[in-house]
Length: 221
Image (cartoon, rainbow, N blue to C red):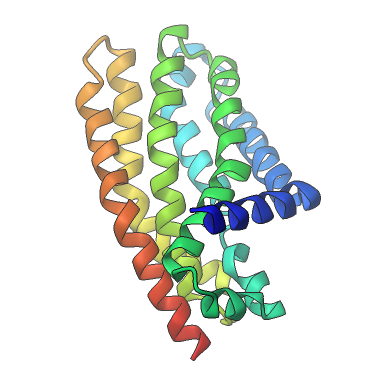
């Protein structure tokens, strides 16, 4: 556990020191959401009706911006091979790197989402369900993205391939995340949607680090 926390702290330091990936993700999120009223019109009722879908789709795309370099930078400088040879299980290394990516990229998106929801004329009662749905759904997206990032290590045009691998797998998370917000908007119980999102997270938590570690071992051979 101590070694895993050290890797987590190292990756967070690198992310905060560089800052470009987190800043780019937040700016993409803000700008993409801000452009939608120009495309679909400024009518408040329409924006409120489609706002949850807009926020979830843009948050999904923004969270994937830094996934391509999740393992690639360590692979390029040789540190990934050293981590694979360390006594710490590679699955624990993967979990630490996923957690660092989620903290540095997804948490700012979750913090910005309620403010952007108000800009889309969303009612105040959906802000808490929106934040909770993102809090449950974005870790699953990061876990799925880690598998894709491990599979594209060393490949050219990895960003395009990563999107093709991850986006279809993230569609169920997107559907139930939007469904939770829509249920809260219509006054229906959103708890079933939250339970499904939690189930996705519990299923991905053991499976995705194992799959990503296996792909990394294959890339290092």
